[in-house]
Length: 283
Length: 353
Image (cartoon, rainbow over all chains, first blue to last red):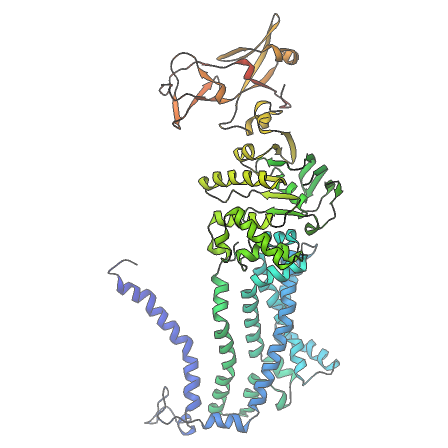
């Protein structure tokens, strides 16, 4: 940047950046404000003299308390955690191995198979849940966590496979060849050389898979029916919206607490993750 | 420590025949260099010896044992790659120890060998570093170290110096040669650089389009190239080629071209007689040409020598002469050479006559 053109930097860099940050963070701010706002203020019409949509002068934790004591929110959190972790683990194991195979083993239909796997990812869930519902009924796993743990991989495995395939392709082939000459069998080269180098890729695939299954809505809505089996997204929306009555305070409290694990996972791995995206893997 | 034998070796990729009927015997302790332009099949040949590439047909044996279907790990070879292929997540020590760990060596033995190799290569101070903290030359040394700790029967080098800058390349070349003399291991070295090939190899294999053109000691290739391609590839600046017509006058044969007439030396007369009246290719090394009389045009000066960029008839001819020669551009010069040092090639088959 040329000296003396500071206003230019403000106009083209800081201003758009500020607008971006505000647009991104506003929903979270709104969730927080709504969570701590008393009911009396929440339902105040816009032409009321004390109407103040962006702040509250009487913060309260009554909605959070309601959420944690009057609903099954704790159970939903545990359900979601279990389902998200289990389906992420399954998808990661399959995705890493499949991605490696598609990237490295040159077998006859590798290219076509890779594309086919990607195409399955493009089938909309809103279409796929109909046949899946049939399968789940046949296996009598409806209304159990397994209904979701086994169906989430249908979109998570293609996702992880593709992400890992790209990552493995970026690792120089010579590393593996060298390991095999050094005395490692293919699985040892994979385990000791390729996978450790691919850790950032595996982590990012895991983070994305975890987030996708944590937020998943349609399958959870269709395959689970009893309140004590539900996940957070479904539980909050189905139990805190009764008819046309919206319990906004508790709804937002649920959304806020529900997003904490995802935020936690991101910030926990962010160092590794960013290192993986920016770091060099060249020998 | 090992003798490598390639018999009727072929490699076909989809549609391309990369290596054609290669026969080669690499003797124990020998340093053999495969050289040729890119795409000539030299790297593919090396990778087949390593076991990284399937063999379409033919046979590779090490110490009399056919290794065609042996996995790379079971061939007891070590390979140094062009991009070094150091494991980025391991320290230098771990990089060098990896092969030994895979082969279940005892910890003290691993330690002894790694330390010894580090001493030989002068990288003792780097053992705890990661590859990304090393310079190009240091990485190169680590890659070498990783190969020598294993004490393999055969060393394979795939253009190991081409990622280094010019000065370092010359230095590493000398060190490599010294290392090989010290280790007394069979080595196969691939490069596209003929200077590297000539300085390193006990014998040099020149390849082109998957076919071996000539195998021989460096000087043999330089003095008695079997093909026009070899003659043009070995030596810098490259050999000059002039199309000449052979004419007979009495017992003597003359090679003639516009601006050039030279008597065929007696020892070649017999072989060239059947070309009488036909066109052949005359090959002249720039260093065999000398200015006769005054004048020539100096175009490049290296200090120690002058390259004259001239034409004989339609053929461009480069002469390497003494820096004492004073000439200016566009001046006519007379060049002479000893006919005994001229090469003749068949115009059609390009084989030496």
